Length: 322
Image (cartoon, rainbow, N blue to C red; front, side):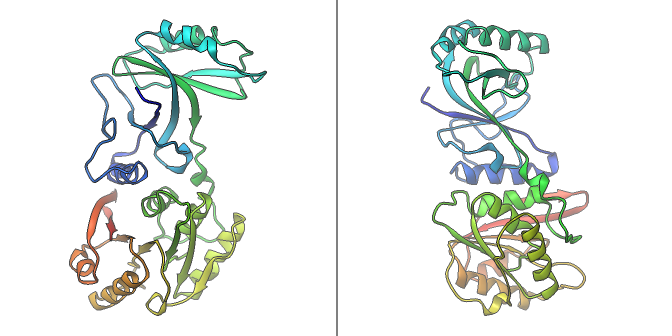
């Protein structure tokens, strides 16, 4: 097995399509495609979904990834792993070994025993509460894998409490996933959210190092976005502007089309916004509560991937367009 990363993820049923669309984007997979393992790879005993990839990414990027295991040793048995870990050089650092539970057939007590057995063979001081280095061990398709383990810090949860809220704004989880779908690889990329509202997508994007600016036609929304950005220590990247008057060129864009009772858009209004968007970017992630495929195509886009996100009887469509 080549050096790789195992990402363990799970999601609520209503967000399953969004989760898989985000993972396809982050790991460079085509729609419906697979990496080394399918996005749904579970096997007969796996209780958690996983993706195996050569791409190394902070698990905190995604609201769905729970842990990342950077595989450094593998073997047919736990004993093989225990023998291999003796080679680890900690250079005075403390450590902890955790069982990254993919295989639900392994009882809890046995998982703890595996942790102890492997940990006992690492030369160094174990620290259960605040270790300098965290290691993980798991079993996938009958092979035991061991390596450095990273856990998701759930940064988006900290963004739930904002000075300014809006009832129809995206959840921070969905906003983070949408930002990732738009810009999976941030280096050197410029992006725009031309209907940014109170800045929910902007905050998630900026927190992940994505260079994104925002505009909105509503002065109250712009004021709210500025307050929210300042609250979390982000710069003011918002301008009061009708997106149909925007110029410039961006690598990616996120457009959450307005849909509340005060923002009812006619098909002609939607088309003019989509045509303006087409003039700004080569890639757009469009969030809509209506089926607007014909308008998207008329504006000059091709829909390359999509998903539906449901919350009770309410649903949003996420369209990836080029």
